[in-house]
Length: 145
Length: 399
Image 1 (cartoon, rainbow over the protein chains, first blue to last red):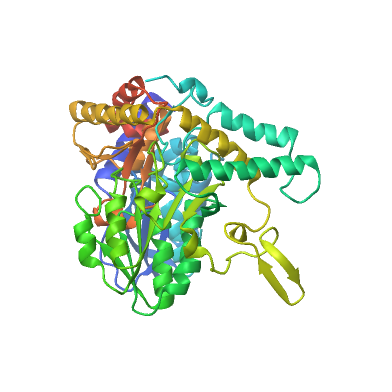
Image 2 (image 1 turned 120 degrees about the horizontal axis):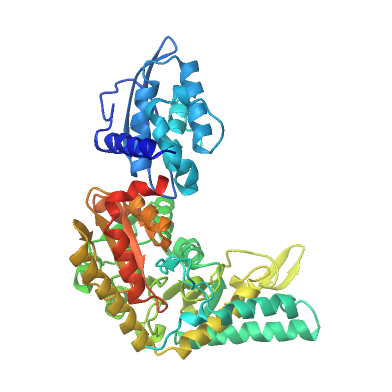
C-alpha cells in the first residue's frame, strides 16, 4: 500500500465513522436482519426495501467499533440501488478482500479502504458483520452466521 | 515488594499482560506440577489397586484439604467443579430449584457477571418467581441497609459478587450475610474476583456458598471450587450421575456417596487439581497484605497517570481499592482502543465483560478494562499511557 493510498484510506474510514451514510432512517415494512458479534458486542440491524429484485433503499442501526460502523456505512452506499445479484457479487468480493484473497477492487468503491483489516484477524468480524446481516435480510429476514 | 515476575514464564519482552481479571498468568510451579502428573503418574483416581492410583488419589484429596484450609472451610465442604459459572448454575439447579416457589424472590445486583445473573433469571422464569435487582451505590457495592429494605419472607436466595469484575469494588460480605440470614435466606457469593489476593475466611464471613475459579488465582483452567455449608446440601439429590459418585448401583436403584463426592461425577480434572495445589502454595508464600498494597498502589498510579496524560478519559471506578480500572476515552470505541493496545503488545479486555445489564445501565457499549497483578510494574503502566496518548490514531491497527 502506498503512502498516498494509506492516507486516503484513513480519511475515507474516518469520514464514514464521523459521518455515517444512510444510518437510522425510516424503515417501515422493510425487511430486517440483526446480527451481533457476541465476543465483542458489536451489533447491527440492516433494513432493506427490496422491490423487483433491486435494493431500493437500505438503512441500519449500528453500535460498534470504528471498523464495524464505517464498514456498515460504506456497504450501505455500495449496495443501495443495486440489483440483488450484483449486490451479492459485491458482498462476495468484499469478503474475499477481507480474508486476503483475490478480489475485484473495481466494484468495491470506498470499501477498498478496509483492505488493511485482512492483516488484523481479530477485526475481520467487525468489518463483515453488516455484510452478513445484509445476506440475512436478503435471504429470508433470518440471521445467517 | 519482592519481585515475582521470574515465577511466570509468560512474562517476557513480547507482551504486557494487563488482563489478569480474565485469567491470571501461571507460575512455573503450577505448570511443572501439571507436566509431572502427565509424564510420571498419569493415572486415574481410585479406579485401581495400583500404588500410582493410590498416590494420585492421596495427592488429590490432600489438595481438597489444602483448599479448605485456604478459605477456612472443612474438607467435606469443598466441591471441585469446572469453574465459578458451573458452581452457581449447580446451586440454582439443585437447592435453588428445590426451595423456590411461585412468587418467591431472588436478589442480585446489576453489577453481577452473567454467571451470577442468568442462572437466577432462568430459575425465576421456570418457577414463576421474581428476580429482584437491589440498587447499588455509585461504586457498585450493595449497602447492607438498602439490602435490608429489599428483604422479606419471600426472598429465598441473595447472590452477589464479592468483587465486581468491571468496577473492582468490594462488597462487605460479612455485613450483607447478616442481613440475609435475618430472613433465613441463602447467601451465595461469586468470589471469582474476590479470591484474588484477599484472605478469605468463609466461616467468619458466614456465607452459605462461596465460589471461585482456580485460573484466576494462578491455577489452571477447567477447575472451580464451590464452598458450601455442609448441612445445606447434605440431603440434596445430585445433579450429575455416573462414575465415582455412587455407593451402589443395580438395575433398578442407585445410592450415592455423601457430599462432596456425590457432586463429583465422572473422571475429575486431576491435573488441574494437582496444579492448583501448587498455586495455593504459591499464594501462601506471598505476603498478601504487601501484595495487595502493591497492586492497589499500581492502580492508583495508573489512574493518576491517565488523569494527567489522557484527554477526555472517563474512569468508572477511580476510588475503588482494587486491581481493576475500567475506562473509556470520549469518541473512541473501547474495541478500537484495545485493538491499538494489542498492536503495541499490550493485552487488556474491552467490551461488556460478561456484564451486559451493568454496561447497558451505564448507557455505554462497553469499557476498556485494565486488571493488574503482582507481576505488573510501573514501567508497564508508563508504556500503556504512552500508547493511550495516541488513542486518536486507532486506525493504525489496519495500516
